[in-house]
Length: 284
Ligand code: FES
Image (cartoon, helix red, strand yellow):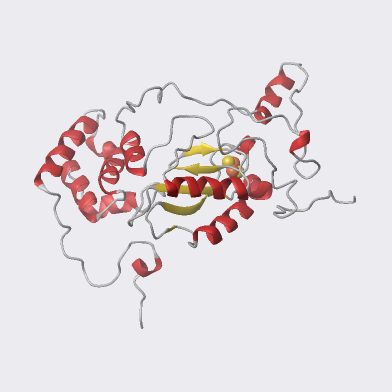
């Protein structure tokens, strides 16, 4: 019986011949990471609780969680590499192979999908010439479809290195990735300014984001979410939210926190070139 190693299927887990020991970090890198790890581990009553941020830390070094990184985590936490691997392969925020500077995630969960997320993802695959979880030849963009990011009131949502780009269309998403590849600065719709994947990983490891204004930057609930709050308070539900299948952007409240990539534009509901679903209600 022939078993195809699952690493060939993109999972990064090998079922074939045992691998050689992971190569060591250079001494200076190891010393630097050990100092960082000590700081992280000191935050927790039990050292093994530091595994998740430590995986972000090693990801910040090489852009993904290498075998060397997992060996490092095992060493400093007194765990086996099997225990570390089990965690690193469970969570999708840990990358297991070399990837791009910018992780472009298109939400294709239910609401974003019907609002145009599926169309955006299909167009980006064609535009970039890559499939899901694949990286462009220039090493800039890794494209993936992602699950709901709790930003449904800004659907369809694209995330770059976990920063929000709201109310996207296929055209705006293509412009976004073109700018990222060309090195043109782009601004998320809300939250902190964009940084590279490695820089993001270090912040996720728990180290301060020292860029001016980054910590103060934030985002609030969108108009659609606030409707419920206003109704609960007995107020007029303004601004009006239109059923996505019944109207276009001309009927919708303007989005808040506009960025260079989500200025007022067509949504999939009004863009005939990119239909996102039925355009009429049942019985109409
Ligand atoms: S469905 Fe896309 S953010 Fe919730």
